[in-house]
Amino acid sequence: MSSRREITKILVANRGEIAVRVMRTCREMGIPTVAVYSDADRGCLHVRYADEAVHLGPSPARESYLAIDKVIAAARQTGADAVHPGYGFLSENPAFARAAAQAGLAFIGPPPESMEAMGVKTTARARMAAAGVPTVPGSPAPLAGPDEARAFAESIGFPVMIKAAAGGGGKGMKRCERAEDLPALWASARREAAGAFGDDRLYLEKYLDRPRHVEIQVFFDGHGNGVWLGERECSVQRRHQKVIEETPSCALDGALREAMGEVAVRAARAVGYVGAGTVEFLVDARRSFYFLEMNTRLQVEHPVTELCTGLDLVRLQIEVARGARLPFTQAEVARRGHAIEARVYAEDPAKGFFPSPGRISYLRAPGGPGVRDDAGVYTGWVVSPYYDPLLSKLSAWAPTREEAIARLDRALGEYVVHGIATNLTWLRQVLRHPAFRAGDYDTGFCQAFAADLAPRPDPRHERAALAAAAVAAFKRDLDREGAFAARALPAGGSGWVRAGRARALKGGPR
Image (tube, rainbow, N blue to C red; front, side, top):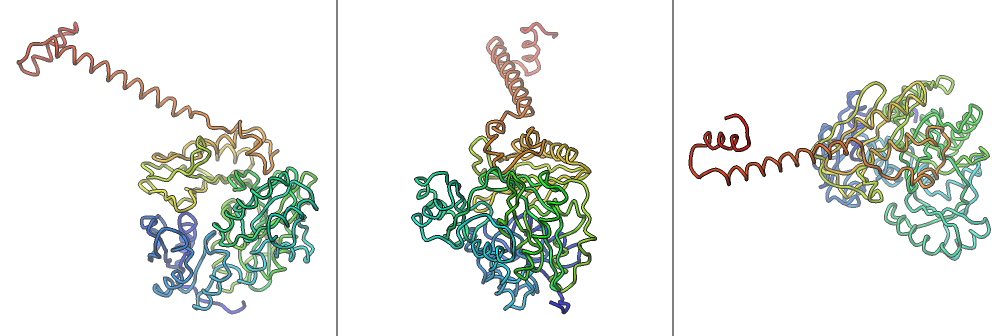
Protein backbone atom coordinates (compact mmCIF):
# COMPACT_ATOMS: atom_id res chain seq x y z
CA MET A 1 0.00 0.00 0.00
CA SER A 2 2.13 2.85 -1.23
CA SER A 3 -0.24 5.20 -3.10
CA ARG A 4 -2.39 7.75 -1.31
CA ARG A 5 -6.12 6.93 -1.28
CA GLU A 6 -8.87 9.45 -0.77
CA ILE A 7 -11.41 8.72 1.96
CA THR A 8 -14.26 11.23 1.93
CA LYS A 9 -17.14 9.41 3.66
CA ILE A 10 -17.02 6.45 6.07
CA LEU A 11 -19.79 3.96 6.75
CA VAL A 12 -19.45 2.56 10.29
CA ALA A 13 -20.63 -1.05 10.14
CA ASN A 14 -21.46 -1.32 13.82
CA ARG A 15 -23.67 0.05 16.57
CA GLY A 16 -23.63 1.54 20.06
CA GLU A 17 -20.60 2.96 21.80
CA ILE A 18 -17.96 1.81 19.32
CA ALA A 19 -19.85 3.33 16.40
CA VAL A 20 -20.12 6.65 18.26
CA ARG A 21 -16.44 6.48 19.20
CA VAL A 22 -15.38 6.02 15.54
CA MET A 23 -17.71 8.78 14.38
CA ARG A 24 -16.26 11.25 16.87
CA THR A 25 -12.80 10.91 15.36
CA CYS A 26 -14.29 11.16 11.87
CA ARG A 27 -16.00 14.41 12.84
CA GLU A 28 -12.72 15.81 14.15
CA MET A 29 -11.11 14.87 10.82
CA GLY A 30 -13.92 16.49 8.83
CA ILE A 31 -15.09 13.16 7.36
CA PRO A 32 -18.89 12.61 7.05
CA THR A 33 -20.21 9.34 8.46
CA VAL A 34 -22.98 6.88 7.67
CA ALA A 35 -24.70 4.82 10.37
CA VAL A 36 -26.49 1.53 9.82
CA TYR A 37 -29.17 0.27 12.14
CA SER A 38 -31.69 -2.50 12.80
CA ASP A 39 -35.31 -2.24 13.87
CA ALA A 40 -34.29 -2.30 17.54
CA ASP A 41 -31.77 0.50 17.03
CA ARG A 42 -33.87 3.15 15.27
CA GLY A 43 -33.33 5.56 18.16
CA CYS A 44 -29.77 4.52 18.93
CA LEU A 45 -27.22 7.24 19.71
CA HIS A 46 -24.96 6.31 16.80
CA VAL A 47 -27.90 6.82 14.41
CA ARG A 48 -28.47 10.31 15.82
CA TYR A 49 -24.78 11.18 15.76
CA ALA A 50 -24.04 10.19 12.15
CA ASP A 51 -24.53 12.48 9.16
CA GLU A 52 -26.65 9.83 7.42
CA ALA A 53 -28.28 6.58 8.45
CA VAL A 54 -29.51 3.51 6.58
CA HIS A 55 -31.93 0.90 7.90
CA LEU A 56 -30.59 -2.64 7.46
CA GLY A 57 -33.51 -4.80 8.56
CA PRO A 58 -34.92 -6.79 11.47
CA SER A 59 -33.40 -6.76 14.95
CA PRO A 60 -31.58 -10.14 14.89
CA ALA A 61 -27.95 -9.46 13.96
CA ARG A 62 -27.92 -12.10 11.23
CA GLU A 63 -30.62 -10.16 9.40
CA SER A 64 -29.00 -6.76 9.85
CA TYR A 65 -25.48 -6.10 11.18
CA LEU A 66 -24.13 -9.44 9.92
CA ALA A 67 -25.74 -9.19 6.48
CA ILE A 68 -22.76 -8.33 4.25
CA ASP A 69 -24.83 -7.58 1.16
CA LYS A 70 -27.03 -5.11 3.07
CA VAL A 71 -24.05 -3.27 4.56
CA ILE A 72 -22.32 -2.97 1.16
CA ALA A 73 -25.58 -1.78 -0.43
CA ALA A 74 -25.89 0.90 2.27
CA ALA A 75 -22.38 2.15 1.43
CA ARG A 76 -23.20 2.32 -2.27
CA GLN A 77 -26.52 4.02 -1.61
CA THR A 78 -24.91 6.82 0.42
CA GLY A 79 -21.74 7.24 -1.63
CA ALA A 80 -19.42 6.13 1.15
CA ASP A 81 -15.94 5.23 -0.06
CA ALA A 82 -14.72 3.48 3.10
CA VAL A 83 -16.07 1.21 5.82
CA HIS A 84 -14.96 0.93 9.45
CA PRO A 85 -16.11 -2.31 11.09
CA GLY A 86 -15.52 -1.41 14.76
CA TYR A 87 -15.26 -4.59 16.83
CA GLY A 88 -17.50 -7.64 16.85
CA PHE A 89 -20.05 -8.34 14.10
CA LEU A 90 -18.17 -8.29 10.75
CA SER A 91 -14.91 -6.80 12.04
CA GLU A 92 -12.89 -10.04 11.67
CA ASN A 93 -14.75 -11.46 8.69
CA PRO A 94 -12.45 -11.79 5.65
CA ALA A 95 -15.45 -12.23 3.33
CA PHE A 96 -16.66 -8.77 4.38
CA ALA A 97 -13.23 -7.22 3.77
CA ARG A 98 -13.15 -8.78 0.30
CA ALA A 99 -16.71 -7.68 -0.49
CA ALA A 100 -15.80 -4.13 0.50
CA ALA A 101 -12.75 -4.18 -1.78
CA GLN A 102 -14.80 -5.57 -4.67
CA ALA A 103 -17.28 -2.72 -4.18
CA GLY A 104 -14.43 -0.19 -4.37
CA LEU A 105 -14.51 0.60 -0.66
CA ALA A 106 -11.48 1.08 1.56
CA PHE A 107 -11.68 -1.43 4.42
CA ILE A 108 -10.31 0.23 7.55
CA GLY A 109 -8.70 -2.88 8.94
CA PRO A 110 -6.16 -5.57 8.07
CA PRO A 111 -6.01 -7.50 4.78
CA PRO A 112 -8.39 -10.48 4.60
CA GLU A 113 -5.38 -12.80 4.36
CA SER A 114 -4.21 -11.63 7.79
CA MET A 115 -7.66 -12.23 9.22
CA GLU A 116 -7.71 -15.74 7.81
CA ALA A 117 -4.24 -16.50 9.16
CA MET A 118 -5.29 -15.46 12.67
CA GLY A 119 -9.04 -16.11 12.51
CA VAL A 120 -8.94 -19.88 12.99
CA LYS A 121 -7.13 -20.34 16.29
CA THR A 122 -5.47 -23.63 15.43
CA THR A 123 -4.10 -22.18 12.17
CA ALA A 124 -2.90 -19.12 14.06
CA ARG A 125 -1.11 -21.29 16.63
CA ALA A 126 0.68 -23.19 13.87
CA ARG A 127 1.74 -19.95 12.16
CA MET A 128 3.00 -18.52 15.42
CA ALA A 129 4.97 -21.66 16.30
CA ALA A 130 6.61 -21.50 12.88
CA ALA A 131 7.52 -17.86 13.54
CA GLY A 132 9.16 -18.77 16.85
CA VAL A 133 6.36 -17.43 19.04
CA PRO A 134 5.78 -19.54 22.20
CA THR A 135 2.33 -21.16 22.30
CA VAL A 136 0.31 -23.01 24.93
CA PRO A 137 0.36 -26.81 24.37
CA GLY A 138 -2.77 -27.74 22.46
CA SER A 139 -4.30 -29.57 19.51
CA PRO A 140 -2.78 -28.52 16.15
CA ALA A 141 -6.19 -28.62 14.42
CA PRO A 142 -9.90 -28.68 15.30
CA LEU A 143 -10.92 -32.02 16.80
CA ALA A 144 -13.59 -34.27 15.32
CA GLY A 145 -15.57 -34.83 18.49
CA PRO A 146 -15.49 -35.58 22.22
CA ASP A 147 -13.83 -38.99 21.77
CA GLU A 148 -10.87 -37.53 19.88
CA ALA A 149 -10.78 -34.63 22.32
CA ARG A 150 -10.65 -36.99 25.29
CA ALA A 151 -7.74 -38.92 23.82
CA PHE A 152 -5.83 -35.69 23.18
CA ALA A 153 -6.63 -34.31 26.62
CA GLU A 154 -5.29 -37.45 28.26
CA SER A 155 -2.08 -37.08 26.25
CA ILE A 156 -1.38 -33.55 27.58
CA GLY A 157 -3.11 -34.02 30.96
CA PHE A 158 -6.17 -32.48 32.58
CA PRO A 159 -7.32 -29.79 33.19
CA VAL A 160 -7.79 -28.51 29.65
CA MET A 161 -9.63 -25.64 27.97
CA ILE A 162 -12.15 -26.38 25.24
CA LYS A 163 -12.10 -23.46 22.80
CA ALA A 164 -13.91 -22.37 19.65
CA ALA A 165 -11.59 -22.53 16.65
CA ALA A 166 -13.15 -19.39 15.16
CA GLY A 167 -13.92 -17.75 18.49
CA GLY A 168 -12.98 -15.12 20.97
CA GLY A 169 -14.54 -13.07 23.76
CA GLY A 170 -15.09 -16.12 25.96
CA LYS A 171 -17.71 -17.66 23.66
CA GLY A 172 -17.47 -21.42 23.18
CA MET A 173 -14.88 -21.72 25.95
CA LYS A 174 -15.11 -24.28 28.77
CA ARG A 175 -12.66 -25.49 31.40
CA CYS A 176 -12.69 -29.27 31.77
CA GLU A 177 -11.23 -30.88 34.90
CA ARG A 178 -12.11 -34.54 34.31
CA ALA A 179 -12.51 -36.89 31.35
CA GLU A 180 -16.04 -37.81 32.34
CA ASP A 181 -17.15 -34.15 32.12
CA LEU A 182 -15.79 -33.65 28.62
CA PRO A 183 -18.77 -34.84 26.48
CA ALA A 184 -21.27 -32.48 28.12
CA LEU A 185 -18.88 -29.52 28.11
CA TRP A 186 -17.95 -30.25 24.50
CA ALA A 187 -21.61 -30.19 23.44
CA SER A 188 -22.22 -26.95 25.31
CA ALA A 189 -19.13 -25.25 23.83
CA ARG A 190 -20.12 -26.43 20.35
CA ARG A 191 -23.59 -24.87 20.65
CA GLU A 192 -22.11 -21.59 21.88
CA ALA A 193 -19.54 -21.49 19.09
CA ALA A 194 -22.13 -22.16 16.41
CA GLY A 195 -24.41 -19.45 17.76
CA ALA A 196 -21.70 -16.83 18.18
CA PHE A 197 -19.53 -17.44 15.11
CA GLY A 198 -21.49 -19.69 12.76
CA ASP A 199 -18.63 -22.20 13.16
CA ASP A 200 -18.87 -25.03 15.70
CA ARG A 201 -15.31 -26.37 15.36
CA LEU A 202 -13.48 -26.81 18.66
CA TYR A 203 -9.92 -27.49 19.84
CA LEU A 204 -8.13 -28.06 23.15
CA GLU A 205 -5.42 -26.22 25.05
CA LYS A 206 -3.63 -27.13 28.24
CA TYR A 207 -5.03 -25.16 31.16
CA LEU A 208 -2.31 -23.08 32.82
CA ASP A 209 -2.23 -22.65 36.59
CA ARG A 210 -3.09 -19.11 37.77
CA PRO A 211 -2.46 -17.46 34.39
CA ARG A 212 -2.64 -13.74 33.80
CA HIS A 213 -4.15 -12.47 30.56
CA VAL A 214 -1.86 -9.80 29.13
CA GLU A 215 -2.23 -8.40 25.62
CA ILE A 216 0.00 -6.20 23.48
CA GLN A 217 -1.38 -3.46 21.22
CA VAL A 218 0.40 -3.42 17.85
CA PHE A 219 0.08 -1.10 14.88
CA PHE A 220 1.39 -1.51 11.33
CA ASP A 221 1.22 0.63 8.23
CA GLY A 222 1.18 -0.63 4.65
CA HIS A 223 4.89 0.07 4.20
CA GLY A 224 6.21 -2.59 6.55
CA ASN A 225 6.59 -0.36 9.61
CA GLY A 226 5.30 -1.82 12.86
CA VAL A 227 5.31 -0.85 16.54
CA TRP A 228 3.89 -2.05 19.84
CA LEU A 229 2.14 0.49 22.06
CA GLY A 230 2.30 -1.14 25.48
CA GLU A 231 0.33 -3.87 27.17
CA ARG A 232 -3.07 -4.24 28.80
CA GLU A 233 -3.79 -6.47 31.80
CA CYS A 234 -7.15 -8.18 31.24
CA SER A 235 -7.24 -10.78 34.00
CA VAL A 236 -10.43 -9.60 35.73
CA GLN A 237 -12.80 -11.80 33.76
CA ARG A 238 -16.25 -13.17 34.45
CA ARG A 239 -17.06 -16.31 32.48
CA HIS A 240 -14.01 -15.63 30.31
CA GLN A 241 -15.34 -12.15 29.44
CA LYS A 242 -13.06 -9.23 30.28
CA VAL A 243 -14.60 -6.77 32.73
CA ILE A 244 -11.76 -4.53 33.94
CA GLU A 245 -8.57 -3.76 31.99
CA GLU A 246 -5.56 -1.69 32.95
CA THR A 247 -2.20 -0.55 31.67
CA PRO A 248 0.58 -1.03 32.57
CA SER A 249 0.33 -4.54 34.01
CA CYS A 250 1.53 -5.21 37.56
CA ALA A 251 2.83 -8.60 36.39
CA LEU A 252 5.43 -7.24 33.97
CA ASP A 253 8.81 -5.67 34.58
CA GLY A 254 10.70 -3.74 31.92
CA ALA A 255 12.52 -6.74 30.48
CA LEU A 256 9.44 -8.94 30.22
CA ARG A 257 7.44 -6.08 28.72
CA GLU A 258 10.05 -5.50 26.02
CA ALA A 259 10.26 -9.22 25.24
CA MET A 260 6.50 -9.53 24.86
CA GLY A 261 6.31 -6.39 22.73
CA GLU A 262 8.99 -7.66 20.36
CA VAL A 263 7.28 -11.06 20.06
CA ALA A 264 3.92 -9.38 19.36
CA VAL A 265 5.43 -7.35 16.51
CA ARG A 266 7.05 -10.51 15.15
CA ALA A 267 3.71 -12.33 15.30
CA ALA A 268 1.88 -9.57 13.41
CA ARG A 269 4.63 -9.24 10.83
CA ALA A 270 4.46 -13.00 10.16
CA VAL A 271 0.93 -12.60 8.75
CA GLY A 272 1.49 -9.37 6.81
CA TYR A 273 -0.53 -7.32 9.23
CA VAL A 274 -1.75 -3.75 8.58
CA GLY A 275 -3.60 -1.48 11.00
CA ALA A 276 -4.53 -1.87 14.69
CA GLY A 277 -4.31 -5.35 16.20
CA THR A 278 -3.90 -7.02 19.56
CA VAL A 279 -1.71 -10.03 20.30
CA GLU A 280 -2.94 -11.79 23.41
CA PHE A 281 -0.77 -13.84 25.77
CA LEU A 282 -1.09 -15.89 28.93
CA VAL A 283 1.60 -15.27 31.54
CA ASP A 284 2.02 -18.15 34.01
CA ALA A 285 3.16 -18.13 37.63
CA ARG A 286 6.78 -18.58 36.50
CA ARG A 287 6.47 -15.46 34.30
CA SER A 288 6.70 -17.45 31.09
CA PHE A 289 4.38 -16.16 28.38
CA TYR A 290 2.49 -17.98 25.63
CA PHE A 291 0.63 -16.81 22.53
CA LEU A 292 -3.13 -17.09 22.98
CA GLU A 293 -4.66 -15.45 19.92
CA MET A 294 -4.62 -12.29 17.84
CA ASN A 295 -7.61 -10.00 17.50
CA THR A 296 -7.42 -8.50 14.03
CA ARG A 297 -9.39 -5.35 14.82
CA LEU A 298 -9.66 -2.43 17.18
CA GLN A 299 -9.98 -3.87 20.69
CA VAL A 300 -12.82 -3.05 23.08
CA GLU A 301 -10.32 -1.84 25.70
CA HIS A 302 -8.31 0.43 23.41
CA PRO A 303 -9.17 3.60 25.45
CA VAL A 304 -6.64 2.79 28.20
CA THR A 305 -3.86 2.59 25.60
CA GLU A 306 -4.96 5.91 24.15
CA LEU A 307 -4.99 7.52 27.61
CA CYS A 308 -1.42 6.43 28.35
CA THR A 309 0.08 7.09 24.90
CA GLY A 310 -1.87 10.19 23.88
CA LEU A 311 -2.64 8.55 20.51
CA ASP A 312 -5.96 8.32 18.69
CA LEU A 313 -5.97 4.77 17.34
CA VAL A 314 -9.01 5.35 15.12
CA ARG A 315 -7.32 8.33 13.47
CA LEU A 316 -4.24 6.18 12.90
CA GLN A 317 -6.44 3.47 11.39
CA ILE A 318 -7.96 5.93 8.93
CA GLU A 319 -4.60 7.46 7.98
CA VAL A 320 -3.04 4.04 7.40
CA ALA A 321 -6.05 3.05 5.25
CA ARG A 322 -5.34 6.17 3.21
CA GLY A 323 -1.84 4.88 2.60
CA ALA A 324 0.08 6.99 5.12
CA ARG A 325 3.16 5.82 6.99
CA LEU A 326 3.21 5.59 10.77
CA PRO A 327 4.23 9.06 12.00
CA PHE A 328 6.53 7.69 14.72
CA THR A 329 9.03 4.92 15.38
CA GLN A 330 9.17 2.43 18.24
CA ALA A 331 11.72 4.61 20.04
CA GLU A 332 9.31 7.55 19.88
CA VAL A 333 6.41 5.73 21.52
CA ALA A 334 5.90 7.33 24.92
CA ARG A 335 3.73 5.90 27.68
CA ARG A 336 2.91 7.72 30.88
CA GLY A 337 0.82 7.16 33.97
CA HIS A 338 -1.75 4.47 34.59
CA ALA A 339 -5.20 3.90 33.09
CA ILE A 340 -8.04 1.52 34.07
CA GLU A 341 -11.25 0.74 32.21
CA ALA A 342 -14.44 -0.78 33.64
CA ARG A 343 -17.18 -2.19 31.43
CA VAL A 344 -20.60 -1.02 32.62
CA TYR A 345 -23.25 -3.60 31.75
CA ALA A 346 -27.04 -3.70 31.94
CA GLU A 347 -27.02 -6.83 34.04
CA ASP A 348 -28.05 -7.77 37.57
CA PRO A 349 -25.27 -9.19 39.80
CA ALA A 350 -27.92 -10.24 42.35
CA LYS A 351 -29.49 -12.50 39.71
CA GLY A 352 -26.37 -14.19 38.40
CA PHE A 353 -25.52 -11.24 36.13
CA PHE A 354 -28.63 -11.90 34.08
CA PRO A 355 -29.10 -9.20 31.38
CA SER A 356 -31.44 -6.37 32.34
CA PRO A 357 -33.05 -5.01 29.17
CA GLY A 358 -35.50 -2.15 29.47
CA ARG A 359 -35.87 1.61 29.32
CA ILE A 360 -33.30 3.85 31.00
CA SER A 361 -35.52 6.31 32.89
CA TYR A 362 -32.60 8.48 34.05
CA LEU A 363 -28.88 8.55 33.31
CA ARG A 364 -26.11 10.76 34.65
CA ALA A 365 -22.60 9.97 33.45
CA PRO A 366 -19.57 10.93 35.55
CA GLY A 367 -16.88 13.41 34.57
CA GLY A 368 -13.97 15.30 36.04
CA PRO A 369 -10.20 15.21 35.50
CA GLY A 370 -8.85 12.09 33.85
CA VAL A 371 -12.26 10.43 33.31
CA ARG A 372 -13.45 9.14 29.93
CA ASP A 373 -16.86 7.60 29.28
CA ASP A 374 -17.31 5.80 25.94
CA ALA A 375 -21.06 5.27 25.80
CA GLY A 376 -23.85 4.71 23.32
CA VAL A 377 -26.91 5.21 25.53
CA TYR A 378 -28.95 8.07 26.97
CA THR A 379 -31.99 8.79 29.15
CA GLY A 380 -34.99 7.22 27.49
CA TRP A 381 -32.99 4.66 25.52
CA VAL A 382 -34.29 1.09 25.59
CA VAL A 383 -31.62 -1.55 26.18
CA SER A 384 -32.39 -4.29 23.67
CA PRO A 385 -32.31 -8.01 24.44
CA TYR A 386 -30.89 -8.64 20.95
CA TYR A 387 -27.33 -7.43 21.57
CA ASP A 388 -24.56 -7.37 24.13
CA PRO A 389 -25.80 -5.44 27.22
CA LEU A 390 -22.72 -3.16 27.35
CA LEU A 391 -23.78 0.38 28.28
CA SER A 392 -20.43 2.09 28.39
CA LYS A 393 -16.71 1.77 29.01
CA LEU A 394 -15.68 4.04 31.87
CA SER A 395 -11.95 4.77 32.03
CA ALA A 396 -9.74 6.77 34.37
CA TRP A 397 -6.16 7.99 33.98
CA ALA A 398 -3.82 9.21 36.73
CA PRO A 399 -0.06 9.45 37.30
CA THR A 400 -0.05 6.31 39.50
CA ARG A 401 -2.06 3.10 39.75
CA GLU A 402 -3.33 3.97 43.22
CA GLU A 403 -4.62 7.33 42.00
CA ALA A 404 -6.18 5.76 38.90
CA ILE A 405 -8.07 3.21 41.04
CA ALA A 406 -9.31 5.96 43.36
CA ARG A 407 -10.38 8.09 40.39
CA LEU A 408 -12.28 5.27 38.70
CA ASP A 409 -13.93 4.33 42.00
CA ARG A 410 -15.05 7.92 42.43
CA ALA A 411 -16.37 8.07 38.86
CA LEU A 412 -18.31 4.81 39.24
CA GLY A 413 -19.87 6.25 42.39
CA GLU A 414 -21.09 9.25 40.38
CA TYR A 415 -22.60 7.10 37.63
CA VAL A 416 -26.39 7.03 38.00
CA VAL A 417 -28.61 4.75 35.91
CA HIS A 418 -32.29 4.25 36.73
CA GLY A 419 -34.84 1.92 35.18
CA ILE A 420 -32.56 -1.08 34.70
CA ALA A 421 -30.10 -3.05 36.81
CA THR A 422 -26.35 -2.50 36.30
CA ASN A 423 -23.05 -3.87 37.59
CA LEU A 424 -21.83 -0.48 38.88
CA THR A 425 -21.69 -1.47 42.55
CA TRP A 426 -20.03 -4.80 41.71
CA LEU A 427 -17.30 -2.99 39.75
CA ARG A 428 -16.55 -0.81 42.77
CA GLN A 429 -16.24 -3.90 44.94
CA VAL A 430 -13.64 -5.28 42.53
CA LEU A 431 -11.64 -2.06 42.66
CA ARG A 432 -11.71 -2.07 46.45
CA HIS A 433 -10.73 -5.72 46.87
CA PRO A 434 -7.34 -6.13 48.60
CA ALA A 435 -6.08 -8.61 45.96
CA PHE A 436 -6.88 -6.23 43.12
CA ARG A 437 -5.37 -3.25 44.91
CA ALA A 438 -2.21 -5.26 45.54
CA GLY A 439 -2.08 -6.26 41.86
CA ASP A 440 -1.99 -9.89 42.97
CA TYR A 441 -4.68 -11.41 40.79
CA ASP A 442 -5.11 -13.72 37.79
CA THR A 443 -7.89 -14.90 35.47
CA GLY A 444 -9.47 -16.83 38.37
CA PHE A 445 -9.98 -13.65 40.41
CA CYS A 446 -13.76 -13.36 40.01
CA GLN A 447 -14.34 -17.02 40.80
CA ALA A 448 -11.90 -17.15 43.72
CA PHE A 449 -13.39 -14.09 45.39
CA ALA A 450 -17.02 -14.54 44.37
CA ALA A 451 -18.17 -14.42 48.00
CA ASP A 452 -16.30 -11.16 48.61
CA LEU A 453 -17.81 -9.64 45.48
CA ALA A 454 -21.37 -10.81 46.17
CA PRO A 455 -23.93 -7.99 45.94
CA ARG A 456 -24.31 -5.87 49.05
CA PRO A 457 -26.90 -3.17 49.69
CA ASP A 458 -25.77 0.22 48.43
CA PRO A 459 -25.70 2.68 51.41
CA ARG A 460 -27.32 5.28 49.14
CA HIS A 461 -30.21 2.89 48.51
CA GLU A 462 -30.52 2.18 52.23
CA ARG A 463 -30.80 5.92 52.97
CA ALA A 464 -33.34 6.34 50.18
CA ALA A 465 -35.36 3.41 51.52
CA LEU A 466 -35.37 4.90 55.04
CA ALA A 467 -36.46 8.28 53.66
CA ALA A 468 -39.22 6.65 51.62
CA ALA A 469 -40.39 4.70 54.69
CA ALA A 470 -40.49 7.90 56.76
CA VAL A 471 -42.52 9.72 54.10
CA ALA A 472 -44.92 6.77 53.84
CA ALA A 473 -45.37 6.69 57.63
CA PHE A 474 -45.99 10.45 57.74
CA LYS A 475 -48.57 10.16 54.97
CA ARG A 476 -50.33 7.33 56.82
CA ASP A 477 -50.52 9.48 59.97
CA LEU A 478 -52.01 12.39 58.01
CA ASP A 479 -54.57 10.09 56.38
CA ARG A 480 -55.59 8.69 59.76
CA GLU A 481 -55.96 12.18 61.26
CA GLY A 482 -58.01 13.28 58.26
CA ALA A 483 -60.29 10.29 58.58
CA PHE A 484 -60.78 10.96 62.34
CA ALA A 485 -61.59 14.62 61.71
CA ALA A 486 -64.09 13.75 58.99
CA ARG A 487 -65.94 11.42 61.36
CA ALA A 488 -65.95 13.97 64.22
CA LEU A 489 -67.26 16.96 62.25
CA PRO A 490 -70.90 17.51 61.32
CA ALA A 491 -71.82 17.55 57.69
CA GLY A 492 -72.01 20.85 55.91
CA GLY A 493 -70.13 24.07 56.53
CA SER A 494 -67.42 25.61 54.46
CA GLY A 495 -64.05 24.00 53.94
CA TRP A 496 -62.38 26.77 55.96
CA VAL A 497 -64.74 26.20 58.88
CA ARG A 498 -64.30 22.46 58.71
CA ALA A 499 -60.52 22.90 58.66
CA GLY A 500 -60.70 25.13 61.75
CA ARG A 501 -62.83 22.60 63.61
CA ALA A 502 -60.39 19.85 62.68
CA ARG A 503 -57.53 21.84 64.22
CA ALA A 504 -59.60 22.43 67.33
CA LEU A 505 -60.28 18.72 67.69
CA LYS A 506 -56.56 18.08 67.54
CA GLY A 507 -55.85 20.80 70.09
CA GLY A 508 -54.28 23.21 67.62
CA PRO A 509 -54.86 26.97 67.31
CA ARG A 510 -58.15 28.11 65.78
